[in-house]
Length: 176
Image (cartoon, rainbow, N blue to C red):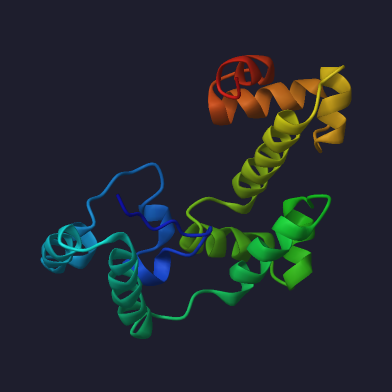
């Protein structure tokens, strides 16, 4: 088994479609790369693991060479968001790169596939899950504040929206 995992906004140059067209959808790779996919798949079956990686890398680099450059504003923000200890709101995010909230929304949709508010929500949830894995939770209200939520209700609402579980149920079933 071999796979390629892209960072947020990283797949667009290789697939050459706006990311919002891919959100909540499933497509076969031949939808984007045509008959070339069958040739690559056949070739991959005959190779050892390291050679598979090199073949995929070469194919991706070839496609990248003719792709439109990714939006550097969004690439910068995605990297910065991962490094910022506290997440800004959308207005703060737009201000950090000097664009309007609407421009930021369009750029995020085209590059990442979701708007900046949803992206920030996902990042906050990922951080909360990491904290849940590495610590004990004495109080859900305190945990919510430490994880960057306004209150416990905000934490529960985001968890239900993104995971279909309450934080407690998520901890018991998914992280168990």
